[in-house]
Image 1 (cartoon, rainbow, N blue to C red):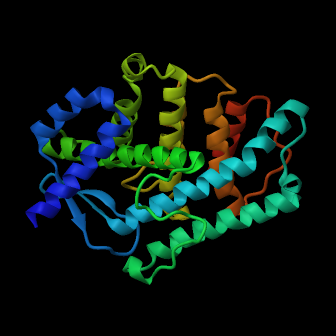
Image 2: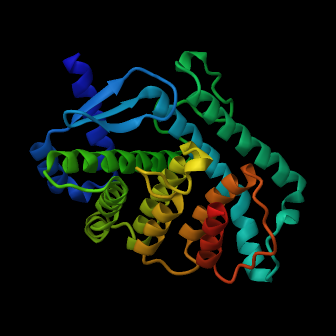
Image 3: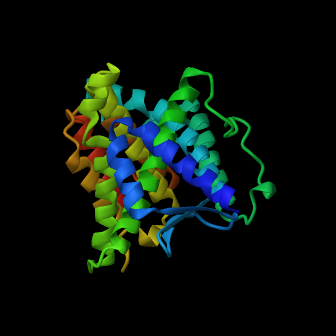
Length: 307
């Protein structure tokens, strides 16, 4: 049992440090001070990455598989919608439901929705052994060798790191004597995870030689992916918030407000594509939306989801 706990802890640490290697000293200090207990639990229904009692963070294999499949579904969404968004901005035509009548896009949308449905079906199963793995998604047995699969893998690792960092902040708060309202705690956990991944990217860019904006884009996109994971697994009735959790819109706006990105940065196109996959799934009507810039359009989609 101890070896399982050590293996789970090592896996979580590796994911976080691979996502933000410039934070190794900060991370080691936090880990040593709070000694979180990482527990790999048995599969069960629903989404399960959460802080538990006695400084624990619990997760299971089935939940990680759900995130994996959703990551590949969202890449399909980005591939499907991004060119439409760029073209709509260039030629100043309106975005409405009618533009999605393209035969190729209809087929791709069906694939996206099939994968999202597969994820939700998996959430309803007690054990992953009862699940039929989608044919067009590689199994989670390592980093895919193709370029696109490799990119999705990197985004998925960072999205998982964001989720674990969020829960780590719960552990930190629980270890303190501070009294904090549940909604404020959730927002603070989001902030901790967001800043851990983004606040020191200049250091990583300098050491690694990767362009700063490329690093920022990739990490911001991974947080967008993690945010959409939350959106998909949150029952629609709770999108507007609950006694314990802020609205999905509030959490998304906290992210977009934090980012200092140009109004036509690739991030906005990526995030809009992911949001469109949910808007199309929920049959939320799109009526004559104009893309003045990609950031503005993304914010319009967030507002639509909130309605």
